[in-house]
Length: 121
Image (cartoon, rainbow, N blue to C red; front, side, top):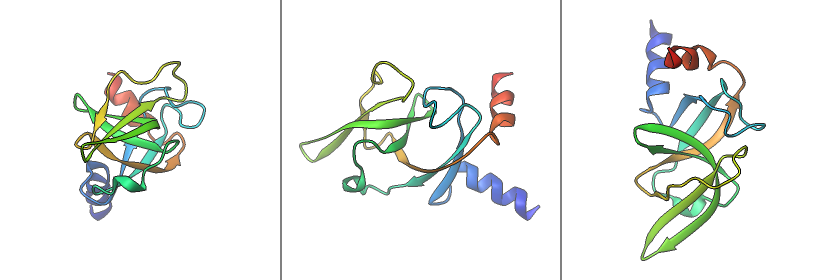
């Protein structure tokens, strides 16, 4: 029971780190569909971010994991531009500070497939 409760909290984003199952191949070959990534919340420390890092952001209620291709600071506000490694074009949304979830630090291959399959039903 303790392990199940811990897993629920870990995947819910209640901690400084949380896990997300990857549901698409947009980050192939580095991160594949069915992999789980561990996201570290950045707590508004945007100066730690740099181009080339893989980040997670929330858009329309979905967490997207893509690579930072540009960071712009304008009038004291940060804006982030991303692109999936397998995508030919950048994402068509500009990510603001409120949308950014965190930095992807680790990848665990394949273990997210049950979650992906359940979401596809």
